Amino acid sequence: MVYTGVLTKMQTEFLDPIQYYLVFENDFIHMNQLINKTIEMKFVGHQCLSCGLNKPIYRQGFCKSCFFDKPVAGDWIMRPELSTAHLNKEDRDLEYEKKVQLQPHIVYLANSSNVKVGVTRKSQVPTRWIDQGAHEAIEIVEVPNRYLAGITEVALKDHVADKTNWRKMLRNDNADEDLIEWRQRLKPYIPNEVKDYFIDNNTETHLNFPVEHYPEKPKSLNIEKQMTYSGTLAGIKGQYLIFQDNTVFNVRGNEGLVVELNI
Image (cartoon, rainbow, N blue to C red; front, side):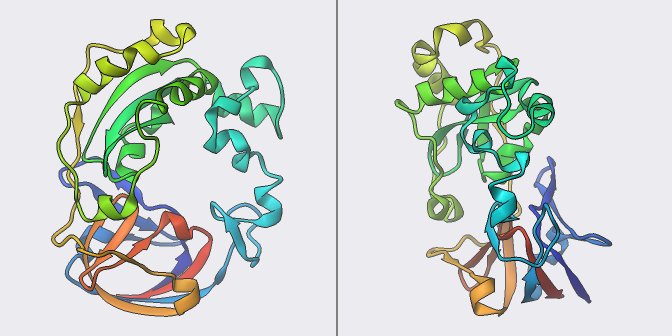
């Protein structure tokens, strides 16, 4: 069976184990069903997720002009503390920014390669944790806008990591942590204007990924450079496809690429 389409991050279902779906314009693939099967992948071209043109992808699935112009790629996406919609101040498109920024946001702790702090919209829990390959996570603050979540993350990342080591995550080289204890340890560093939003009565969420074989030395596949690849799927974690030869492919990191999959 041959499928051709534009890569976007895999859609997921929070089940045991996590269920993954690769969605194309006119079709979708239930990726869990492909574990232990051979997948042939071929690079075909580009399609910007915003303008839809066949232009080189710059970042986050966007061509360079869209990345620096469209509101969906504003700096506040990656740096929530730069959000200004709560001040009625526009960055690129105030209507869009109010829609996204002025809704409940969560500051959380997740353990994938290590304990890290992160921010996501409340509606994206637990999807955000799945995408990061976290095997356990917990909410620590729920605030009414993105700015408050952002300044909390900035304050806490002086005391806990804010990045995931993707190689360590894919090797499954991590230890269980007491995230409730971590939450209490970090509580004193939460900004004063956020302290009333602290959550102290919830428990950890645990996630189980469909992986039969973890790579000892993950090798990242650059399909745009290599053009073609064939391998047997050994599992899926985060947004990575893991193959039996230790090759790993970051689907989200290759958004906007047009590929052909022969299964």
